[in-house]
Image (cartoon, rainbow, N blue to C red; front, side, top):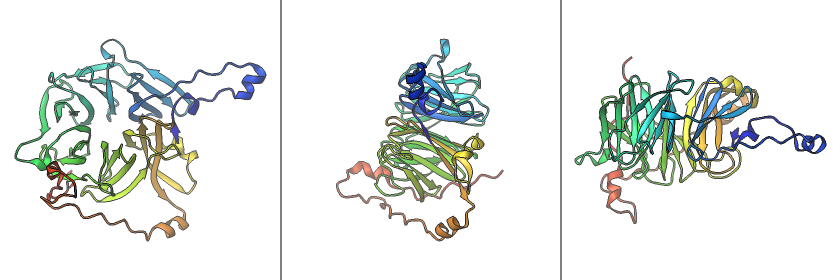
Length: 358
């Protein structure tokens, strides 16, 4: 299922109705360049970086309208949107060098930042009373107090630790235990840190096989799996915490299920019941996945994660094994034609993240 404008959402007069009875055609409300996306209380929210507004798609009533914050909440160059568990929406605005916080009714609650003159916040995630802000210009992830905006920590490169160097962070996610996952588009990997911001390991590296990345842009974490959007291969990869590839889907194109320069991802179980009539009767959905594409005819694509109760499905796929992951480069080893910078992308030998005690 996908959306690119009001024609994909709203029901209206057909072309025959307009010809026979002269009914006025509805004005198309296109979705231009969606970046961040989230689903809350049966409504899909998509941040549009070109129109500088939030699209609001009500699934039950099949209606699409807009939210255009004004006054102190006016956006300049919005880059991403994250809706926290308390319902507050965090919009990273590169033009304002801030994170704008809105409540569930889209009233401005507070402004976080700016923290420095040389700053470009591009993504944000939340955990407890902390906001994690990926800053692509400062080449770091700022950890700030959710209420005061005061910076209380930072994840950044250290000269003596090239394995955890950050060049261009484009996405950030935090799991239920406070572990932080940072996407680096230039070094083409995901870095994992514990809740004390200590480096744990690298997930993925440059390459063109499962478990490798071309141009990673966004990350989400759910059920001990890491989901990474790649705008070069135009797909979404699912990996475990050790970096082992489990599955990928998408691929470039304009057909259902394809992605076209994917940019934003949301995973949750909000409003699953609203989509059951579009699923196979034998399929049991457990979570929804929403992904935005910057271009193409399918700007917001929805996928369902779950399992099948049909015996023929279990018999067919239960015995399938996962593909072997290609052997990664060893420290100091280079692929043919690679420069010295590739040494900084060698996988870490540290152990994968483990669950923190409850």
